[in-house]
Image (tube, rainbow over all chains, first blue to last red):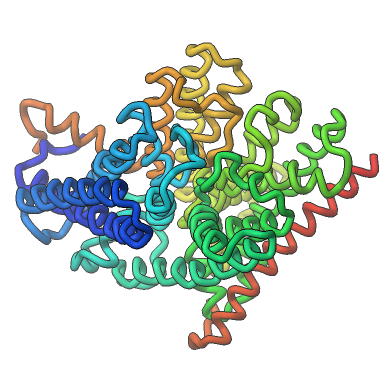
Length: 503
Length: 39
């Protein structure tokens, strides 16, 4: 039970939330400049209004706050949870003003989908969206993948060592350096280096498949932002199917799988420890589950004779499986084809892949390969314990940036997070079923939102009930923050509402 | 963790290692697709 929060606690949370909103406002300057550069005057006004609203709200909160106090764990967790909701509300302003949405709830749904790198969308007439709005969609995904708190820490805050609770609140607990500020900056450095490599590659491949140089560059940038962030937004309503190119699909695959790697792994490999790539528990666990699920999905697809040959199975079956497993959500078929053609076995493999997810401390969602690996090692350890004499003592080891001994606390923590994911998955499946969708389709969409994936069988649409939109929105938010910050916010609200504090 | 000082070559080597790992995964996927397409 939390102690009843004092005014100082609320002001500290206001202060940091205000800084995050100022960061979101400043970020809107990029699409604003894009709109001005391309002569999109109506869109420029939309972004100017949005920027003004974000700065006004941010400055007001920062003014109400107490400046740069040293945040405790509870401050960090609550600030992370509130900041994501506040950022969602202000970042939706340009969406709403663009006229491409039917309601403000749809706008907030799309912002949360972008920030959490889910990639589901309720937008209307995506194929005719302005260049600046597409840039804003890509930026939201990119920033959300790295973390909006990480952005604020890296560029706006002088919280220094005191910023670690804020960083952890956003479900990134890997410290690359003792200083959290240095860690946040390194995460951004890795992403920006890949931004140059990825956009250039997409640009060249885009021109090779017949896009004009400018169009190839813009599409390359947007698709890269969505790929690296394991987001899944694409500038065209047909998603990656629009390009009808094996080369383009393979390049997206290269970058979204790289984006699903742990930032600590990138850091280690870039510093010269290349072997880490092939023995890290996360890459090994990911490769193992991917292979097993590919066998199941391919078997399901070939049993029904869905695709005629190896290349078609690879481009449709394997591509969606790895897109789901990395929680990206890029698609090369229409949503309804999954329901009408794939059959239950392949869809179940896809649901499992979406739930398992990518690496911890990456842009990916889901259970995370680290937790899957840890739980697998725990099962192996328990089995060995049962088979050995009672007096035998042994330690289960695993490799994660060095050799480590499996501890009780790691197993408990991994199991709790996986249970929480399963709980929100069950909740969204139940609400989907109650709204009248078939169980398998409700479960598929629930796995997609809970794991921040973005693959869809067509349930997610502007016409779906508001209660389902709200449930999906909650799942995206809770799944991205990995529950700790969300639970802390609920506890904080309950403690605030109590009449008397607990000493 | 064994680390060496950062340089452009280690950066390029690191990125290539990561992309090679992904290419291996994709090749394994293509191989499995081929095996299943045989029947």
